[in-house]
Image 1 (spheres, rainbow, N blue to C red):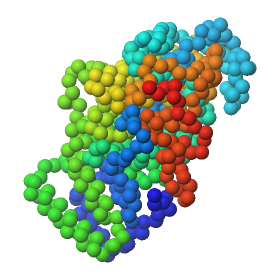
Image 2 (cartoon, one colour):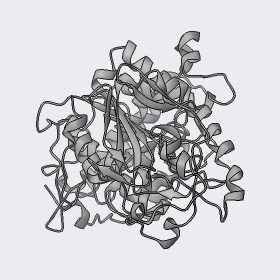
Image 3 (cartoon, rainbow, N blue to C red):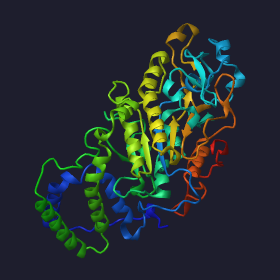
Length: 491
């Protein structure tokens, strides 16, 4: 494969008169094709320049896939495993006491060995045929445990958000590497050439997640593989649709003039990227129809909107994003990534108030998504992922036991819970375990790179064979780590 990371694109200068003419012309044309759409689309032009073959055409997987697409519910902040999916009766016994030293040997920082153990304030019950334990905070999710593989032995390698999120997204704890969504699109391409292959649905109030756009960056992969943020209300992409109407003949005349200017520009510049950019403008025109239709929730029934909690104050925002994820996957988008607002799972203070709040916002929409995918026959081919960059410690983040009633929990990377459903994941499965108080994973431990390798496997790709040549190095999503597919969660 050509070495995209070392390619330099030299754009020849043009006369000031021509530049002014073209710039002013594109400025007048920009209502329909500029803004966020082209930030994604023009990446394809750069990737194709000089004979580069990067594109979003469908690619053959390494082996028969179980899943064709992914919805990643990226619960950044650290959902507390001991309050949601991993009950620990021993916490009742040790409540208010310092954690036994033998359980904190893996701690990276001394502060992680301190603090008083705190029993979960919430009740747990077994659910489904599989008998998985789920907290009363997730009543809707609990009804669907028989569709899931719940991994209770995940672990990360860093206790701080930024490095841990880089690890979750790209496999390493520092920036500059492609997100795993970009790797998936690089490996498989897209089934729909009229929509971005990798769509990001972040909080509509512009509260970017920690690490911002680096969560969906393409790194050293060609830009065509990066995530494209879409809005869950209003126009999906800014400036996608003109804010005025004009006769069809005028539109055709503008495009004919643009072709003439493009042809003249191309004749003088043999090595320009203009050919690829022209095709991207054409794709932007196609998106004016398909993207707007895809994100139009008015076509959904009242029953479906209610299933996702749309219209209710607490669930409307995340519910809309979950429903949009289904509609995008339904139309051939390869990878959709959803983020809640900010760091709502980062429950350092008064977890008795903060954790129920984020559960109320996401529980019904997530369960609605799973139920809707299943009834439409989409769950078998769609892999749904849920989890954060780490969990929480079983200790209270306070100095003494008297403060337990208003305490939160600190970051817990040593053992936490994530789940996957559909797309070849084993149904009704609880895999792995943490120690007696939920401090660290002890049985069937699953690293981030194991998780990545398993996701790729379910999509028909071998992690060791999904390679990008960068400066002579064979870069991989799993890098050079020892990695395994977690067969225990594969159907």
